[in-house]
Every structure is written in C-alpha cells, then in structure tokens.
Length: 148
View 1 (cartoon, helix red, strand yellow):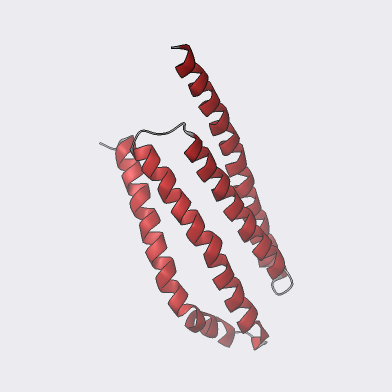
View 2 (cartoon, helix red, strand yellow):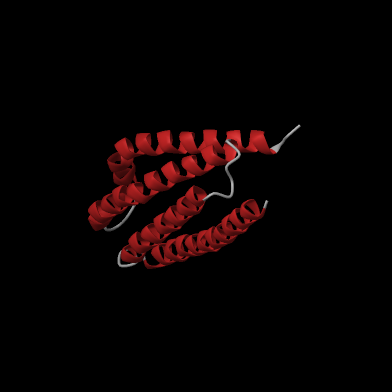
C-alpha cells in the first residue's frame, strides 16, 4: 500500500537521481549542443546555448539541494517549521533566477525562451504562495504551542 512516508522516500530518491543526472549531463553539454547545432542552418547559437545551460545548472543544483533539505525535514516530521519556509523561499528564488536566464535567451530563441520564462516564473510564483501558506501555518503552530 502506498503511503506518505513512501512518497517522501521516493521523492528524495528522485531528487538525488536528478542531481546525479544533472552532473553527468554537465559533462556532455558540449557534445549535446554540438549535435543540436549540427541540425541548424546557423551554428552561431553554440556558445550562447552552452552558456545558458551551464548558467541554469547553478539554480538547478541549489534548488535540488533545498528540495532535499525540505524532504529531509518532512521525513523527520518537521513540517511546519521556519526552515521549511526558508527552503520554499529559496526554491522560488531559484525559479526566478532560471526565469531571468530564460528571459535573456529570448534574444536567440524568442518562442522557446518566452515559454520557458513564463513557465519558470509561474512555478516560482506558485512556490511563493505555498511559502506564504507555510509561514502562516508556522505562526499558527507557534501560537498553538504557546497556548498549550
């Protein structure tokens, strides 16, 4: 039977798998981009695409680290704590950083850059709302603990 603890464990494993895959992919970015650019008429996007991919790794790795901390806290039963609120805030900043990088890529890829920008900015906005809900829940829990 599937339960919450198994779900947290699966999520934690998937975060670690994503981290390992992103490190491996980082080594193959030049080859991947070279294969992609070979199919294009204008090969002038090789360097900008490579730079964008490496720049996107920074917020991605930081987000994976914060997501792992969040899942670790949840697995320990520490759900509505200030640390999780800070982790969610950091995750939203990572999304906004990626959105900024995608906004810069609109110069080279107007359609794809725009779509990626709006998707990552929207996910960042959703995370901000969830962070605000967590912050209120932490306040309510602290008030409740003080009363009892």
